[in-house]
Length: 300
Image (cartoon, rainbow, N blue to C red):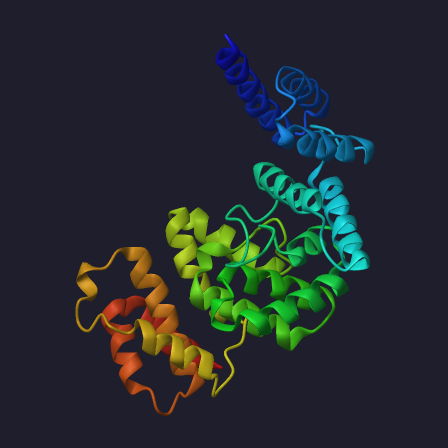
């Protein structure tokens, strides 16, 4: 009988935790308090009840918008700095906030940067809150810290923040890295580069969504939405890492071909006098696009 009661208490804790994740705080508190009344040794009940009450007192509910949640997330972050550390319930609250923000599908759906402590990088929150100067400074530091581990999506975030604060060179380089590494990682919820959206929409109308993403890097360059600086070592080094297809282009998916064509075009632009080999590969990948490329560079 006693084992059955304890099992029921654990089930109540699990249900209470799920209600907490949905920001249904009253139901969560009721379930957790009932669990504790059955088994007072369940120490995590008080922990989760404290989180639920804190969120409720902050004015949050299951109907709260992503911006409202992000505002509180940032307030907790500021308190952590003031305290010189993070109390455990703050850390756990950030985890719940991160999950809820991703569930609302307005924030980074894939979670956070590798090794990010609380699942969503604060730069993402500040960007969605349109606090662009703060987001720019935070993401600039993050890009330097993570280096090669900085994901494509976060280069997009950095480009958004940089463009908003009129750091146009930084914005161009960030968007260029996003499109080079993985154009499928664009977060349309934050994108500041409106012309990229327009070109993508046109490409999607003319073909499949997947192919539109893959073709976006080349057409972004073609329409002069982004610039490929000469001597850009990032481009050449990235292409060297993935340039292992030899003459097996016929076996590649159309999306892979399209993205690879753009990468060779970018590499050709970094050193147009030294990369005849890239042009041969571009022609092998897509004779029609290569013809278009030659027309574009000779007419500029």
